[in-house]
Every structure is written in structure tokens, then in C-alpha cells.
Length: 125
Image 1 (cartoon, rainbow, N blue to C red):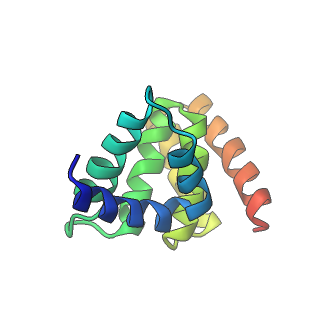
Image 2 (cartoon, rainbow, N blue to C red):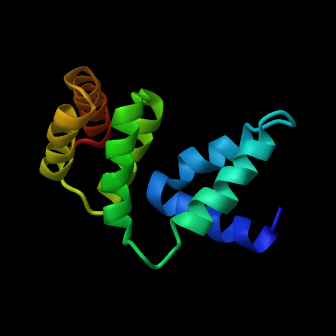
């Protein structure tokens, strides 16, 4: 593990997903899943999210689309929160899911809308 890349990724991960969630993920990691925490923090959150080619708002739009296509509700909830933190509005997220309904399937988009509503309620928005 590259400690510098991990720390940079950890900073970005906290900014996008929230420090409480990220810190709990790291704190609750054990010998089995800590290597995965290190991998996603170093490569996903540093090497990709910190690249200069796209801003965080755009990366959030892409993530919401892809996670909808994969129908991964747990990850979608995290990234809805991250999208809000990255400047997307509820209306922006609505448009992403409507677009995804056409290209990824209505069922996947309906689940994404449901997940997003739960996050909006938790965040009071």
C-alpha cells in the first residue's frame, strides 16, 4: 500500500461520502476486508476521483448512472449522499435516474428513486 496515495484517497472519500461513514468503514474493517478498504481508498478515491479530467459533480453523475445499471442499492445510497455533497440537486438526480430508466431499465431506475428518497429523508432535503 502506498501510504501517501491512501491518505489522499481517504481525504477525498471523506469529503464525498462523509467522514462518519468512511471512518466507521475503516474502523470496522478486519484482517479479511481491510485489504479491500485499502484498495478502494488508494485506487478508486485517489487515483480516479482525484484525476483532473472530470470534476466531482460529473463523476457523481457517472457513478449514479453506473450503479443504477448494476442495481446496487447499498452503493447507490452512498453515492446519492456523495452526489448531494458534490453539488447535485434532487432535480439533477431525478434526471439521471430518468435517463437511466431508458438505457438501464425501468426496474433499476425505480429502485434508484426509492433509495434516493430514503437518503433525502435522512438528510432532511
